[in-house]
Image (cartoon, rainbow, N blue to C red; front, side):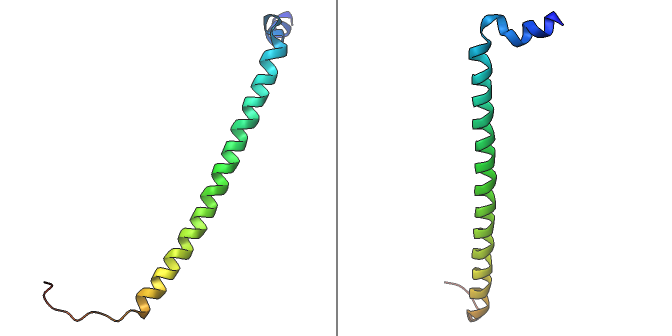
Length: 69
């Protein structure tokens, strides 16, 4: 039991170690949430652009077949 208490005490530096660990975890979690949010937003935008491109391709007349110069 004393080993566990010594671990959480961090050699007298617990007042510095635990808040910094907590802040680091909060920041990392925020970065993960932001990254996933941006990923979903960009996937939606890509799907919109692909759908728009497919509609344009259907409206565009097919070029005459022949040699390209």
